[in-house]
Every structure is written in structure tokens, then in C-alpha cells.
Image (cartoon, rainbow, N blue to C red; front, side):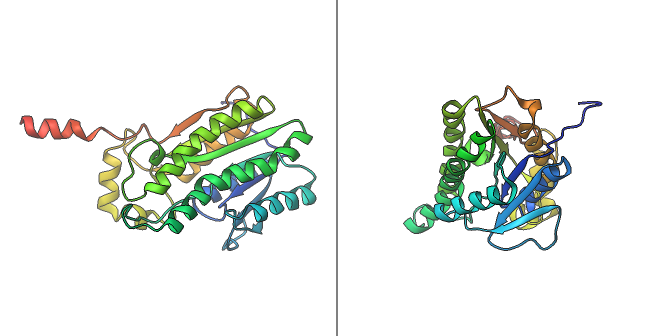
Length: 254
């Protein structure tokens, strides 16, 4: 958008899981655009970056609703919800406990639903708002080892499309489909440099995403520049991965 700057002046935004990683990058970008930004998590951020912090376990719907009420009390309105918090440690489906699966689905699917419900009324008081759900390629393909997470992220697409219709046109609801992203936990997630290079070689863009690039997409979807986009799943995954069968066929045809 040459010559045009996206501004969110006077808007109030919440970024869940906004103290680090992708969430922090989104919070910084929204704050740079002029929004009043609140981030939540279980622990405060290591450094301040232009956002307020509220401690909250968003898996608890009562606590989540109370947090929305507190944000409205402080700022008088609520405009943008970024449902970013999520994730899952690996777990074998055959032995994962029901409690484990329940907690993963609470964090990755039910919390976005509960938070969206809690912010509906304050958004409508000022004519509407924007909800951006941070989804994952794990919800679009098989994800062995993180079955509950994959199921929850897949459900997030249904949540996005359904809320877009039920609450539109006043509230726009979209999802960002995230692929492999460089964050503070890159090595723990994707292995060392050699492993990361091999992963990158299988992506159309030949590299992992920067967290700031996910933040750019979130800023766009939060702004009037995306005024006719709702119910969408925007892929920010570098073009996705090359199908492995191509290399298998090539190897066995040599």
C-alpha cells in the first residue's frame, strides 16, 4: 500500500498470549499503528513494549469474561480481539489422557469462542469490531503427535466462518493460517540449523516466516483496508510445503 499507512488510532485491542512470539509481534504492530493494546497471559512479559498486561488463564471462561469487562472499564470500548494463545506439547493419541485433550481443546478452540462471546456486546456498542483467529497449518493437514491440537485448530475454521455469518456485517471474523515461524522457541520446535534449513527448503519461499510477517497480516485484517474480508482463512505459510510424493516418485524412478 504505497503511500498509505494503516492506522488504528483510538481502537482498543486484546492480543491473547501476547507476551512473546507471534502474539508479541502482533501486539507491537497494533500499538505502532496507534491502537491501545492489552496483552494477556499467565505471566507478565519480560519487557514492556507499548502494551498493558492482564494476567488471565483464558481457558477459564469466567476469568476471560472478567478480563474483557476490565478492558472496557479502563478504556471505554473494545474493538479488536486477536485470539493468538494456543499450542500443544506432543502427545501420543493412544495414551493421551482425557484431561490432557480437554485442556488442549479448551485453549485452542473453546477459549477463542468464549472470548468472542464476551467481546460481542462491547463491540456492538460502538458499531462493531474485528476478531482475528490465529490458526495453523496443523488444522489443514494430518498432524500425528498433536491430534487434539489439530482437531481444535480445524474447528477454529468452522468457528471463524460461522461467527462471520452470525455477527456480520458489524463484526468481521477472519483466521490467519500460520506455517513455520521463527520465534524465541524456534530451535526447540524445529530443531537445529540443519533441520531448519531442510524444513525451509521444502517451503515455496525457501525460509521460515518472521513473526513480524504474521503481525502484518493481523494488522491488515484489523484495519478498514480489509473491510470486505470476513469468514476468510488467509494463509501466511510461505506458499506451503512441497508434496513429498514428488520426491519419492523421483527417487524410485531414477
